[in-house]
Image 1 (tube, rainbow, N blue to C red):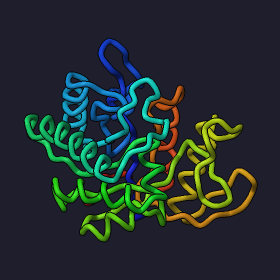
Image 2 (cartoon, rainbow, N blue to C red):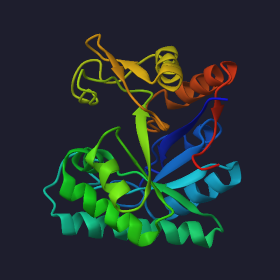
Image 3 (spheres, rainbow, N blue to C red):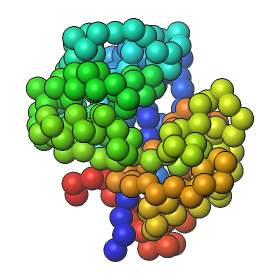
Length: 253
């Protein structure tokens, strides 16, 4: 049977502010990437999101980002490899403590936003993130774009890696995501997103925004939790995959 991991970014509120419908989304995804306090999240949100994941049987991952609450971690910041290592290690340690306290297990690491894109292209940043992850545990899986520096660095550090594709984003002809400030970057139809996911799983292909057919490996597929229609997307994607005989399970299970 074909299978895929559906992951979603979660716990991205801060203080009195809430973002996303996490409790509803957890009924449809198989793994969660929990914000660790730098781009979003706070101790109470991290704890409650971990508890929700454990109650609903969803695998837990860390979602470390750049220290930029105002920009939601989506603005690139000039950091050194040493800083990339330190900020990753700091955030993994924080989330791991909550997971351990609740009797769970940390499964994976997925950098957020600008840090994710920096690590995809810059070897020294990717190596620092992989080193920080491996220093916490070599049993962790590192998520990243197919063929990226991040996945290469993860393999070199002795980590499991997972190639990630996106359900709700369009792609450029070079396989990169369409920048968010460009028209067509976000898929607006749940049916369109579900069809994109099914084709990624069955054929390992995705259609670019400009019409090219791209080969793309996907071990895990992301649905952004902060999207306006995230719950509807997740529900329809899961329904289509179930109808098509594709099993949704966390990696390594």
